[in-house]
Image (cartoon, helix red, strand yellow):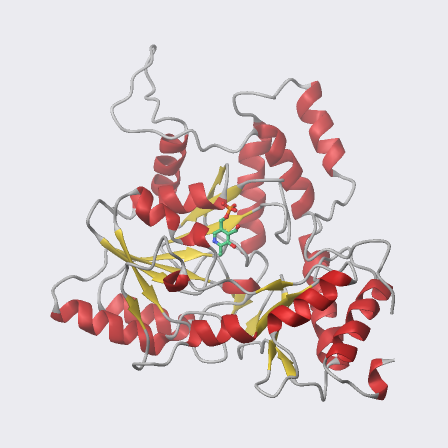
Length: 386
Ligand SMILES: Cc1ncc(COP(=O)(O)O)c(C=O)c1O
């Protein structure tokens, strides 16, 4: 099998052709700055898609997490419980506020927060009289976290939840959309997400007052006065009207994008039957958005996750390791990491065995076949590998 001429990317932006119309409209009406009608429309339309909430369109998912932490009252010295297996953007805003993240392990064989580890951490924190001010819980890889267990635990200890649904737009569990489980939910529209504005994010609150507060802070906390008046610290975090237009166009084909990514996941799953790797299982009763197709190598696989990625790379195919747990990152290593049982780390095991396969909704069936054939060959697959 030779090196591919055209690179197969992990999850590139997938435009639908309507973005230009939205941009043209914004440019022709001169709504380039400071805000503009696409912003409010994007917020309204996204909330209609997820079935609730009040959206605030922001410059990134990280900015949305930052303001959401402030809205939950997180201050310097507070503890904030965070999913350990995630992208650093989930946890960085905790440090922006000089608060202290406590990293909670992921469930064995899964990617999301382990309710047993959370229960242990909450119990311990109560004993120390240092309960967290908030918990940032992630819906990783477009899969709903185990909200049926996580939410009652947080409620029992009076800990508000900030749902990091950056990767999970279009996913749901028990008919509730991801982004609506926590007190505030957050989405990202960066270039590799299921829909993109090139860069951008949105916070979704359950009440209008909180949404107004977030908008106010995102606009430099500029008071409604006839001159520049600032009583509070502000941030320049608003999404531009141009990019909100791109987001509106992208949102129109979200359903198709989810459907295509699901097809990609199922195609991998069928093709890999009998090989020493498993696709990340779908939690019961939940509907992922299948943002990335993640496979876990079994212990007896003939090569490591990194070796498989290197082989694919040599053929011009982009696959990636899964997120490297936060407790393994030099910047977060000094913070407490809590597992369900001593000496067993779900997130380290996931990182060691996990591989993110090309999952872009624009990938053709032929391109996916190329990926499958190479994975099969590397893992010693038989006739099914073609
Ligand atoms: C789980 C998670 N949280 C937070 C972020 C941060 O979002 P952004 O890149 O839009 O700042 C991302 C994505 O990039 C993410 O994957």
